[in-house]
Amino acid sequence: MNTITAAITAVGAYVPDFVLSNKVLETMVDTNDEWITSRTGIKERRILKDEDKGTSYLAIMAAKDLLAKANIDPLEIDLLIMATATPDMPVAATGVYVATEIGATNAFAYDLQAACSSFLYGMSAAAAYIQSGRYKKVLLIGADKMSSIVDYTDRSTCIIFGDGAGAVLFEPNYEGLGLQDEYLRSDGVGRDFLKIPAGGSLVPTTFQTVQDNRHNIIQDGKTVFKYAVTNMADASELILKRNNLTNDDVDWLVPHQANKRIIDATASRMNLEDSKVLMNIEKYGNTTSATLPLVLNDFESLFKKGDTIIFAAFGGGFTWGSIYLKWAYDKK
Image (tube, rainbow, N blue to C red):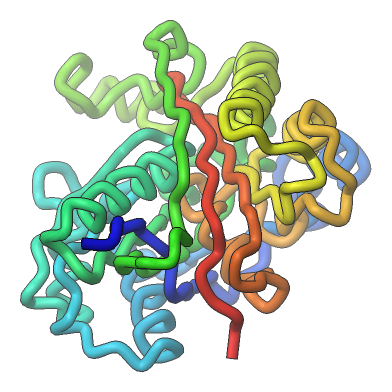
């Protein structure tokens, strides 16, 4: 029997129509376009303004985009993994609702939460299901409505985050393409540096926690930046060495879109030329679980069958890692 590898065979995406530009943010908080651009690389981000729509809406739209582009019957989906840090609600898994809404009623579904590394971790999980031989089509969605947990009077966070969703389909491959290797790590030292303080079992929601504005994301920017630069770069460098790859062997770097300076540091450690580093951070900001699939969707036409792609991400917790994947198709 031929060895099964797990390959990405289709991609899809969705971003809301409303554009929150740096110029608009200048009217909301004490900041300016030059300051934001020079420190983050972000020019604008998309915001889901509909109050009655949550992360599930973004995910459903991205999934439908993938299914339509790839002409796939949702009944063929075996499993749906929902990578998100902003589920619609506690307890009732968002991925379960998404699967039902897109017609994937033969699939089981669950949510996976590892902050900005959620999609990267989800790639590992999806590949493992495919490689087991028991599943043929695994739909992995990364989606976050970050505007629902951002304080738009806090300039350290509101300039960074946006809303969006991306989806990829994993299927078995017998040509040696798809996911080749992974290096995933975590460290609980990061628990206090990037978090939402209240609303969980440790600090349940009360009138006081709401009044004290403890349900929005906060971060120690300098500490998070330091850890992100070091760990994303280390993970990417390690996966190259472990697989005897040089910078010439790498066709594309698909990095988490949190900060252009972090991406630049990772590419520098890998000694990659700028043309191989894929970025759309200027358009979307940090969409958390959606950044990696949004990059894949935006640059899908560049990928050729057999291309070597390195993924890298860093998230709260802390969580981080790198994945080495060989692209499995040419876009038609």
